[in-house]
Length: 453
Ligand code: UDP
Image (cartoon, rainbow, N blue to C red; front, top):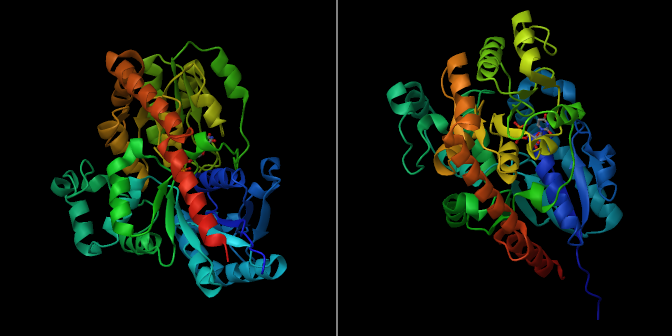
């Protein structure tokens, strides 16, 4: 009798951006620990392969894909769109070569929902595939809903202040203005991309970096609508830590934090893509300075339009910051959030930052920039009640008040208690017997069942 062969290779296809690379590499670690070998297929703009943390992984690069300078020139949205157009053939070539060299040992191709070009190769080689969503389940629900709206009338609703403040039917407590539209492209193109991302085609399952204690009803919605198993296995940064910073971390801020009082510091970071106007930064600096709280501020090179780093900021800004603040280009965010001196996180509310902050029990000041960050900010303020959202034009008075509410007032202490309570629930969900841990086991078992041939 022919010997049964278990397929043990999982091919991962990440989006080349920090917020997507981090969770998919964590997923890779989680699956590696379950006995799978991991092949990561990168575009030419990616630097994770050099990391010693992933020496057990196998890396391939899609030939002819876009580079870092394409990202700078095109902006994130057009970059992603073009990437999907040009990677289809190269990815087929990569998979074809892999099959030729290793034989067909591929248990499945796990592709980031934004790398939907992967489906062409999967179809051609008849491989099992799984869609991986690195955003919240609620953001996925929103993208599904948006992919069905009429772009023209939706745009009119968004422009009408009377409508944009209203709750969107069926998505309570999200208002029209909280829906994940993007600052990086026109609405029609965004809705088109959303239809591509939520179209699961032949994918046999969906994995989500979330957990039922955070998003039970959105997960149930997806489970009903998608008609394939949905596996919420997050937060992956707790389940399977895997350092994958694309920028160099400045650890000097930890020394600075060591000198600050317990729970006093506001940590400010807007993630890897959000931009910040100089006038807003000045209002922030004034507000932070007037609040008398120390602050650690990540100002990423290129995050101020028209400026390499901070050279466009005025002397007034430097004076305000030098009194109580500390600036770095990129921080070891997890170490910062778990530092006892940190009392609050001013965030753009990217999904990773949101999970990381909740995972350390740190309440947030929410200032979303674009896309799903608006969904997360609304949930932080209204559903989990561990955040203060700053809406409209930034001014120093509102900034000062938000910092006081979070760090000084009783309201902030209550938020912190709720955040710590959620932190404990997140930890329990990834422990043995917890919902995310069981979900990962179920996913692995489903692969093993399909693998016998
Ligand atoms: N991050 C970091 N250092 C920083 C700022 C951000 O390590 O100074 C990490 C952060 O821990 C998170 C990721 O970058 O894992 C940002 O992802 P997120 O989804 O929050 O936002 P995005 O960058 O996708 O907008």
